[in-house]
Length: 222
Image (cartoon, rainbow, N blue to C red; front, side):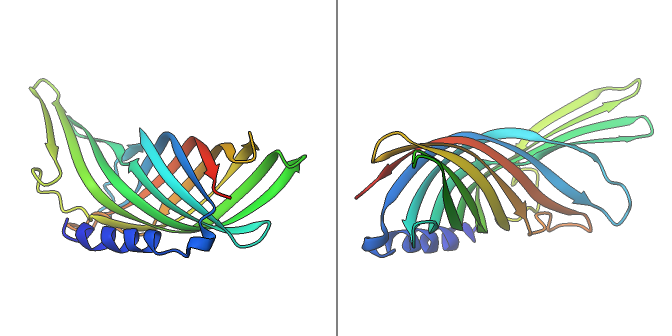
């Protein structure tokens, strides 16, 4: 995953070198991902795909440009992947792939007051890049009137040619509660639509789809 060593320093450089005057607030968030894969195969053998759940932990920096418009930079540890089932003849194959990413997103942000300047609606949208930090696969094969086989490996051990970088579009919404002048609590959703074909080894295509549900706590520096 040599591309990770190139993307991470660039992302950290951008975060560190934002203008100091715009550094208004930081927010920590945690929750879960409900992720899946959009699979395509020219051979027509497309597996049944089920969603998988994983952990999502993030840090966001908000830079207001006006009362309603702002920029949000997000760094997030995000577990993604999916589960697949193929039944052919007397064979039944279950498989799952569980990559974890460091996601970096630059999101435009609109924030609207809903009630007495204590309750707000925030909308975000923009590009995102994910750099894989780990990847695991599990295979289970069951044969009618035969033995069963279960294998757990890393993607490298399984010789799985899987892209280490994912580019996508992200969009979502959150409800924010102004607890004090400095502290804000939030609860929101973010959907990430992967644009990169993660399977680089065959005619099949695989694109990440992830819905993040999280809660957060922000602190404003004023």
